[in-house]
Image (cartoon, rainbow, N blue to C red; front, side, top):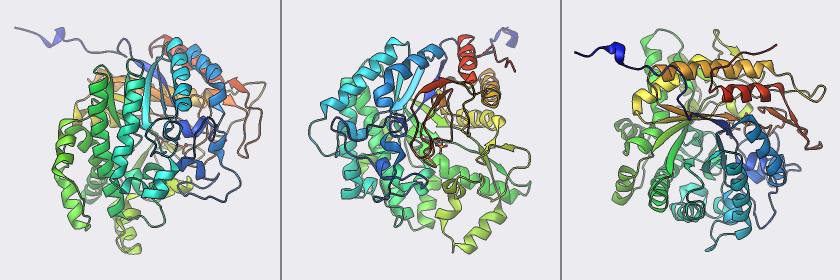
Length: 493
Ligand code: BG6
């Protein structure tokens, strides 16, 4: 006879847990036209406007970012000093293939990443690369309308093959598309290079299909070139609560969740789920695909799931109906967290959750929502999970050469407690990346003043400043947390 008493519960973070941070090339590298790089879709997004290209604006925050391109050594040394075990970032596609259509890659672009990756390795970090993080060569968006066109699959595969060969044994983790998912309906330009003023649901889902095929092809290519590398999916996850105990509100939650699960279901389970075909039928969406596409999707699912988590939202049947009436059933607007564009409020009900505090930019602070997310996703997929992003962005001032950001430590502490609880409950969580360990340009607003970092960068929203870096108080705290593998969460006030 055996006893459950002999079963070991994983009481805390497993040994080798990957603590670290995450960034994206277009939000911090700068050097947007150096060493052969040509513009990407991100390089025509002006400050203050999100998701829309504008080629006549005066100021584009991504052009200089925080000039990581010329500061990478010093910045990586700081990540190393915090004890990072993993660093997630992206490779700017237009550094490697400036237009996307060249036959040969741009050697100078590859060399930059060679040097940067060496620095990361020397500082003790595993490297996790997002292949496409809200950018692609501008040329591909202009000439082909982005991912609407099937040809994108070929261009992407060429990019993936070059990287997988070059960084075999160096990059251990690859992520195919940042936040593949519903974001395509509210950030068509960044996610897929689709003109947001004319896009349709049809375009967006066709583009997603092309990305699914490209993602599976990337899994195949990377595994063939480097059998030890792991390839994951990144979805955006916001925990959704029903507004009330009216079962109709829970039905809305289920439908909303399916809109999001769709992307991970295809990438992990290897097939289109039944509710997707139903949705396409009901919304008159016609996806063109080949049998080979579906074979590829089936045979090459991702190895692990990662997700970004910042906040939760609520859904209600009344709100859904009122929006459907107003917008003449435009599913696009019902689905989209429209407030996100303006970055002023959080919930697609137009109401805030009375049980949760909000950040100054109106995002709910919900560590329990992270626990629920982990339970939900692990319960659904049973594959290893990595938290690709989580963080707190606020306006901050440098006082006496530092920022006393106790609120950031509290935010992180509470999310770590949720992670620990999920691990104890059997969730296979293998790592966590804080978003923006150094202040970078906000993706949503183009602001520098929405600061997430443990390191402050002297640069303002107008692009002025010395670019000098300063450690915030949270720098030392995160270092202690990592050194104790998540055990020492004490905050000295
Ligand atoms: C994630 C994106 O959704 O949110 C990042 O992957 C982004 O690119 C992050 O920066 C935080 O959002 P924001 O708008 O505050 O930069």
